[in-house]
Amino acid sequence: SKSIIIKEDESLPAATTVKISHCSDYRGKRVKVYGWVHRLRVQGKDFMFIVLRDGTGFLQCVLTGRLCNTYDAITLTLETSVVLYGTVTAVPEGKSAPGGHELIVDYWEVISKAPGGNEAISNKVSSDSDPSLLYNQRHLVIRGETASSVLKLRSYTVKAFRDYFDSIEYMEVTPPTLVQTMVEGGSTLFSLPYYGETAYLTQSSQLYLESCVPALGNVFTISQSYRAEKSHTRRHLAEYSHLEAEAGFINFEDLLNLIEDLVCSVVDSVQKHPIAGPILKQLNPNFVPPSRPFLRMEYKDAITWLNEHGIKKEDGTDFVFGDDIPESPERQMTDAINRPILLNRFPGPIKAFYMPKCKDDPRVTESVDLLMPNVGEIVGGSMRISTLEQKLEAFKTQGLKPEEYHFYLDLGKYGGFPRGGFGLGIERFMAWIADRYTVRDCSLYPRFPGRCTP
Ligand code: 4AD
Image (cartoon, rainbow, N blue to C red):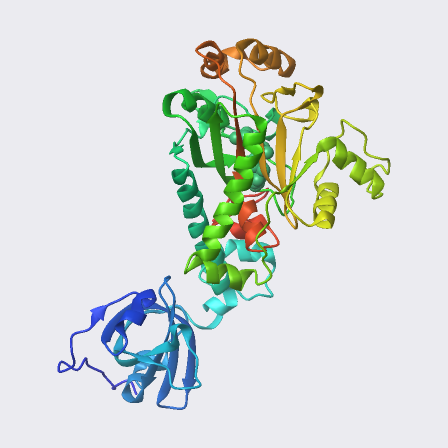
């Protein structure tokens, strides 16, 4: 068999190079497709089926006769990169294949072989592997159907977020992630040496977004944020993609409506998208888009709800006003209510320094979390303190050094203005719509305690 050599038939029409996603436009035409051997089935001596993957889709390819008798054919392994030449043909009646067609191959070449045996991809990413080993092989795992579907859905979702902000005329900005300021409390700051000084990895771009409003109007960003979380939970990452927006001259009610409209509009455009819609359906067949208006629930009523439903604190006692509601009780409540909740008006002491007190009740702040069934909090937002006096007061309480925040303090000095904004964790949003158990599976290369590779 080593002696069998195949050659491209020069008398055939020239093949056009196409991506698999475009093959439908080439029915009956001769094409050339590059990709990786995703699946392989050999049937007897003269029949071979390859499912080719090129990132844009999957294509069933049929090799017959001499094409499957070459040394390359006999030793072909999964993940080998190849180029296949042939005619895109509708599958016979009663048969199915991705796209409803297959490539009847007339010539092919190996580009680079992948190993078989112990080193074969199937041994590296088998589904019974320990999950921590699978994170080591994440670069191979993402070639799989489920992982790549999640990442594709994520790409369309991020685009939908951008389109939404474009439609309401928000400017996109890219604030620095190497910073000197903390936004969400000192305990989750990563620090690093920076030319003889200490710098931090940003927890949130919020303060920078606030500074952009007088310059650019309403703004948003999709930037990386970092949290030195000690919690090993399924919704915490050390590095995540943070969508944040900031709007000037709005009130708290406007802010709640903005968050609701964003989530509903993005879900709607993802569902209607010709490629993203079917991926969403396949990953989360039972997904029901949330209906408007979202339930608005005050923090104090959540405390009452927990008490009425016998959900206790870790020490077995009842929740009281002022307590932080931890992840587990929050989830139990959200799952029981089973619809999105805009939980709002949290007490000041359990929230960030920049949140203003409510005028009708100074015990609580103009703050909101959006809670989703099965995931919990996906958005955190608030109105912002805006005067210099309020800021200096908050800094004193928090022990923050005003000189490190001079750009932020100047906002109150040079024409303070009412404003509000929020942050949404992209991986948490994805875990919600794609029904993934953990945000780790919604991140390209997740970072969490004990993992910083690959
Ligand atoms: O509630 P957070 O901490 O709010 C802020 O950072 C505000 N400064 C945002 C703003 O108003 N501009 O974080 C916002 C969101 C959370 O709701 C969650 O979705 C996500 O960021 N998030 C995380 N996602 C993954 N891993 C973590 N460790 C996260 N911490 C927060």
